[in-house]
Image (cartoon, rainbow, N blue to C red; front, side, top):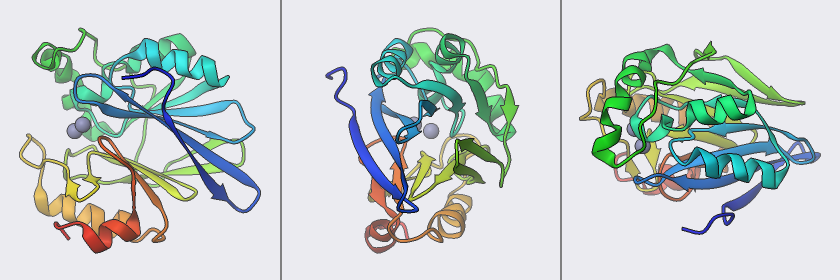
Length: 223
Ligand SMILES: [Zn+2]
Ligand SMILES: [Zn+2]
């Protein structure tokens, strides 16, 4: 793994400003941690700093960005291991859905099983629900509740992009055999909350490559 080689994607927004996304795969399960910001602005959202917090913070410094929010898509161990480190180092707010409180409390017990460094349950500073919004200057991101992989899974919809955690992947879906998971609920979340977004919307999943709404509607074998 090479430090500093996150992939940058530009996304047009209103023809005026751009949202940039950098992907930093972290930890033993190569969880995608995303740094999201408006082109020309220095505030950012860090999505799922699952591990390797020092690397995430270095990347922010390299990009000259200040983390305003840490957004947790869901409470599984591979998505939250470095939340406190990043929040304490940067002063960012920590946002999660209350439906994954139990998962977040117990996740640290699983860290050794995955060869992860010990950590404490994330300290949530603001609980989010369906329809809540976050702003980076004039760019608005909306929270959608997308349970199925876990009860408190949330996706974050921005201009031309959606961060979905482990809800859906390129050609696949998140596991539903973990406690709190449910296949039909997951299918409903995808069809009612993700597939209704414009076809060109970039889907950024918690693992593996990014994809689009159009591609997954057409190719994903689960739909
Ligand atoms: Zn998960
Ligand atoms: Zn995951």
